[in-house]
Image (cartoon, rainbow, N blue to C red; front, top):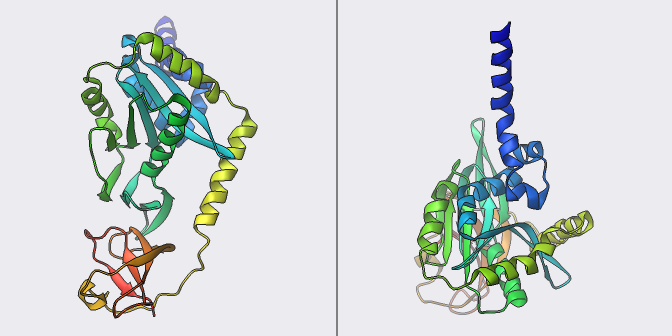
Length: 305
């Protein structure tokens, strides 16, 4: 009987330990999100996991902010995770996705491809690189140009970068979460720029933007939906099926200017977004062509009939 009771106590301790550890973190103190809510919400759990990879930086004076609603014209832009460190501000855009990921720097949307039986389904999502560029733009308006910013887009370890064409430099990264600590360690090894007093000042300035009302959060979601609807307000076009796409040489042999507009289509070869280009000069002036945004890695091109 005593042994059974001891076993039960040990099991209870082991089961409840993660939640007790969670409630000791600054993530919980800042967001007040219940543990079960975080565990059941992929987005929140991804943000929390980013923090867990980096929480040791708090021992050396770093401060963290979560779900920061930065004001912009007529609405807000939300930053998932901000780490304020002596070397600057690290802007983490968390994408806790699985499946195959397709995208480029210039795409308005990226694509997530997920298996579904013998087929696959494709989901579009906003280009996270552009999202972080927007976050940084409006934070600079609040904090000024003197603070270094580092853009880090963090995907889950469960996904595969199937076709991702993104420039990578010292201040601009798209990575999977298991590379997060290594990536931050490399950047954070630079000479310090911010003092502990400046870190605290920035934290105090931004903290109120993490404690917004539910009304502000819902308005933020509605504004995002409205912008997406406006950007996608292009009438669907039926593309004729042909055996093979036309080649670049069959379109034009000389560089000519094009205008571009987004479409609701995806490349049948690589899954990236398709744009519609209209020739503004040359022998094909006025003609329209569907181009894969993953060019030149993917050369899919088809004339609109």
